[in-house]
Image 1 (cartoon, rainbow, N blue to C red):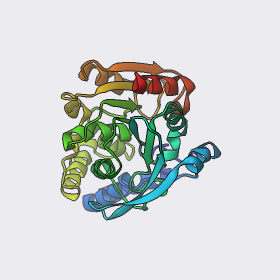
Image 2 (cartoon, helix red, strand yellow; image 1 turned 90 degrees about the vertical axis):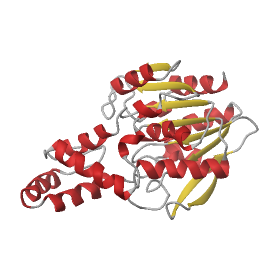
Image 3 (tube, helix red, strand yellow; image 1 turned 60 degrees about the vertical axis):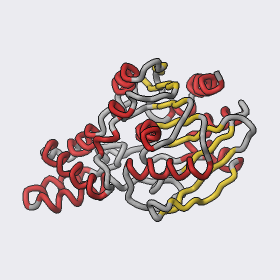
Image 4 (cartoon, rainbow, N blue to C red; image 1 turned 30 degrees about the horizontal axis):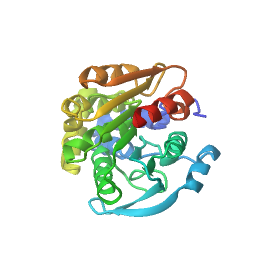
Length: 288
């Protein structure tokens, strides 16, 4: 449970840190920017709950080196003779969060692959960002794919929508709880938590990210990359998601020709991954 002194559930930032950064901003923009970058790119790892351990115990687990990143990631495989599906979790997440979807897909005869993204789960502990997620997906696609379908949760949903522009092909794509149709808004929301000049530090963070990851964050916008998708797309969101507004998925649905939208209620941002109705809709969509 998040304590009262924590001001944001996504980054778990304590109040003393917010206050300190605001004071440092008075003295030095450069130091303030470095602090923002440290926390923005550093995932928080959580203990694995019991409900995820059965999926882990049933999976063939291996470690794969992502050459572009000089980092290792954990791969979880549930093999079958059917079509192949890749599962991509979100920020602060891990492969095990897909346990219900993974098991149901496997029960339906689908071959399932999931991963702990760089800096997450059992993968190497490191600072990371969206471009590295796409790099990891691309290398896993090359070694364990090609995949017929892909499912992405939260920022993982943004990552999978970017796959096709890097040459990956999927017959069907499922996005769950996508947090933004414009990546800039993620930087803005983060900066707002500190009570700093939003536009100033958003511009600085994006400028430095473009150099650090050799990729303009704005080029990953779902509102851009989703326009020319050849895949069938199912978009899922919860009406009362406090971490990612449902309006983002509603907007995405208007951008993707022929996409299907399902809005759930009472599930929040993460429990949606193990809801029986959501799991059923995902499996039915992939098998149809």
